[in-house]
Length: 87
Image 1 (cartoon, helix red, strand yellow):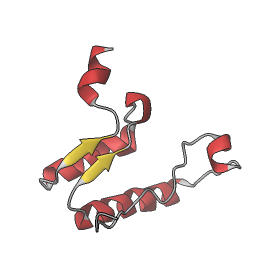
Image 2 (cartoon, rainbow, N blue to C red):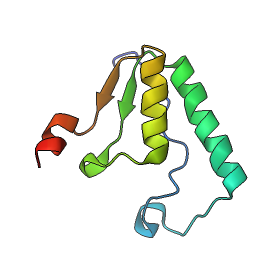
Image 3 (cartoon, rainbow, N blue to C red):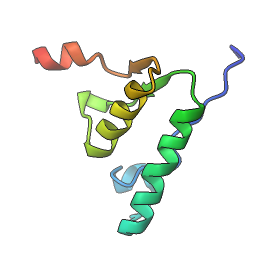
Image 4 (cartoon, rainbow, N blue to C red):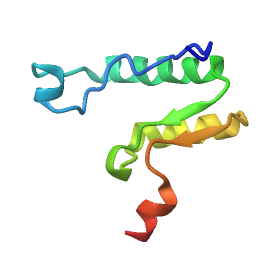
């Protein structure tokens, strides 16, 4: 309703079976393609929201975060990283 377009996560292979409703695995080649897809979405974005549930940032998300910052994109977090670092 705020006139913004959201490019969301298309596939999250690390989610629990309960979240997906079934077990979904991917090949190494598919993982590489998904990582590239996420970076193309970052290219299109005006800002990036990191979905760091419970403060967790995995390898792929870290790579995407670094990529967004290298492009000078504003980055926000679901969970404030400063709070997580103090826990």
